[in-house]
Image: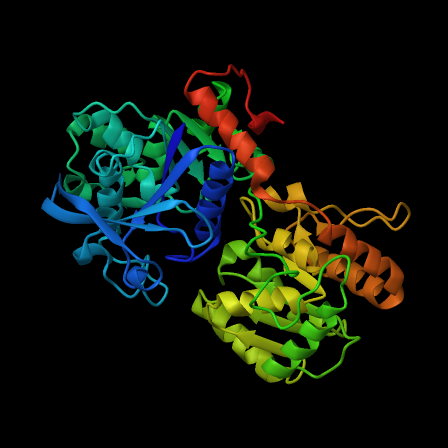
Length: 486
């Protein structure tokens, strides 16, 4: 079986969020199972510095704006033998950013990712890789099944659409439809509430659809960013699924992580304290080993619960914690955390940047990891945190609800602290429970921490579920219901 992933991100070549981690990790897990997986992403600026590239041919793609002459470059993922194809078209992709700059999007985002989707149907023939499955990710590749349906040439591949975040749908003014080079009936099918909606088209025309956790697959049928009806339709037909993301332990494992100061594991956890001490030194926190260090790593957007953190911040700090944040995003959040760090010298630090290195170091140093998300399709940081012994405090939504279980002192079970309502008081209550256990019962805290570190959240199980969907698409298995109803 051959599978071609089509996405906007693939670490280490291009990463903004979790999508960049998921795409290569899942592709490698599938290849370990004997599936011939390959990846297609745009040829962004700087990718040639991250791998040796070979030119595999040229394509001239004609959309609404005229012909685009593209090169196809091939490299290999540095963590495994997964071919990565790059669509090289400098007018669209030779830019400083992936999606945009200074928090905004490039004005020609529609054209850029329409070109990627259109190329996905012709790159396979040009490089001699004929996929049985086109596995497309998020709105950036959602036009693949639309071009397959209306493009005017036969496409034998089946299409699986994975929705990583329904909040981002690729919505554009209808008057820009000519840029897609699609017939009127296709434009009509893409039109939703008077605007082009690329994700809507992908959900409508993909052969199967999945999201990145079972709980999120259920939640979006009730609160689906206006797309509830079509999602319920796909679920009613047994065509909507929820598969939890995994963790790539080749990248995220404190026992082998080259980006942290001291390696450690569940069998030998002493190095965690060394990481905490070094981070305190590096970011200007007081060198206090017994003060609980609360970490956050996130895009600074409303989805991630930062309104709750802003409302409760003074009360959080009154719990006697230290706080460290890493991320960029909305200016109001960036400015708030800069000022908060200035108000609490030695107790709070804000790294307003994107840094893979600091993300690993904060996970390794933190005692507690806070994720109070308003919604969270899957979330990866709570699973990274479990592995790194940073006990998660999360809101019970999406993949957070699927991976974090409330600590029960009576049975000495659970792996974190959970709250339900989207309210600052509930978040504070969960954080207080964590701080009180950390201070009041070191032995119980150590058992809780080590229990999380020993959990197996690897990609092997999730990859098997994806393989099941591929087989369903190819008619080699029969299933009547999807995980969305579990």
